Length: 455
Image (cartoon, rainbow, N blue to C red; front, top):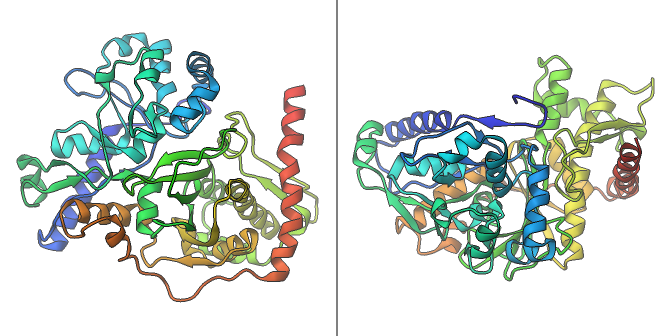
């Protein structure tokens, strides 16, 4: 984080880590591998020159430096037209404003720009030599026509982005290339392995948790927090509060609500407490406080916010703090605030007519019994847990199975998802308390935002 609100990574670090883990998998599996799947953080921008060399560190999904470029995009394309084509408004995290930022702020690097990739697609290039992406990840660039499932010529022209800078776009289970012989030899994998197009982390997680039909959502608490709902047809929230993206299921779509600092809020709080306490111990500590944290609220907007506020300048806050509050109260307030922020997205989904009967938990938060029960009570939904906690990686492997011919289609692959026995059912009394507490939580951001703007 070179400046507040800026987040960057060196793509070479992803490739180093990918080589290491693929080598370990190859050794542990004895080379018995049918294909490779890809998933990764969405929205990041990897800038390459003509020789496919990285020209600067990648700007990440939670980077907030591009507010002025978002205004330019909205002006050039038109707010309604932008949502109509891409399913989304111009948000600071997306890839398109990052390209304009490079043009505006680092013109020397921009003059060398010839290719723009998403993070996982940089790893694909190293594995196969191919420049490609998939429809789900490309949906998060603000450059994809989600109905056509290909780049929007209108938006590229409006932003003066050459079409040949963009990789080809494939459905997630298609073969995007094959493992280069030199890389196969280095990793101890069979040469010419098929590499699936793959999916962005949340679409891959939906495959890995079986969210491939209506009625179920996934609830992921990692660094960010995401609610993901399958859609048979494209459904767009015209206010732009929810993302409408292509799904990793061919010709299907999904709605996605995002809170930027979910697990990241708990990690921040753990560091404030000195870093010695484990996440399991934090859950036990939070369970010692009453529902509603004795009148204490936490707004988890440590990195700005996406759903539903679309505010890169939103600020985190404890509200209602008094001298009698304990570490248990503050810890519970942090965890409740994260789930309340996800509930914001769930309410919008329900308002769009999305059928939600059950949620499947994934990500690091799925390992916490307290956080699973908290989601059940705040969402007033039963919570299921998959045996494979890391939904994105598992989903990528299932997509690789389709690409390699192990499975006939994505639905057959997703049917292999196994569930932990039992559910976290909502406690009726606790759910009733949270319904009232959540009503107060919803009033806090507008009040604090109005005060911030006034000053």
